[in-house]
Image 1 (cartoon, rainbow, N blue to C red):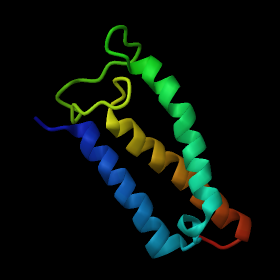
Image 2 (image 1 turned 90 degrees about the horizontal axis):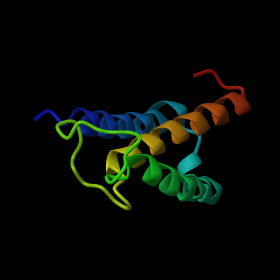
Image 3 (image 1 turned 135 degrees about the horizontal axis):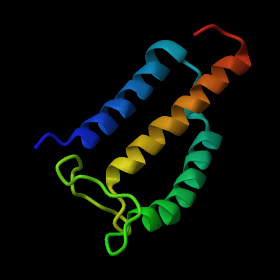
Image 4 (image 1 turned 45 degrees about the horizontal axis):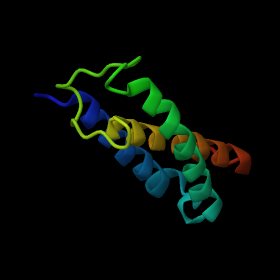
Amino acid sequence: MSREYLIAAVVSVVLVVAAEFAVLRTGLFRRPAYWLTMAIVFAFQVPVDGWLTKLDAPIVRYAEWAISGIRFPWDIPVEDFLFGFSMVTLTLLLWERARTGEAV
């Protein structure tokens, strides 16, 4: 059992956090506005992702061998939250870097 989606999701989080602390250094993680933004993103992700991945009538199906099997809440694979964090955070980090005009 390779758990590819789980591994990719965890690696994406590690890489994004490492990019912030080692390269970008925007200070985004210290800002309350960032954490509020993430709360809003996840508040919208839960109903949408829950509807898409509900086990009784899924629109999106995951190979059981590719995920951890942990689904919370409403049958949402926890890996989806990891990728959501990575995608939104990397976008905000690069946007912040571009706003300040510093090269990456």
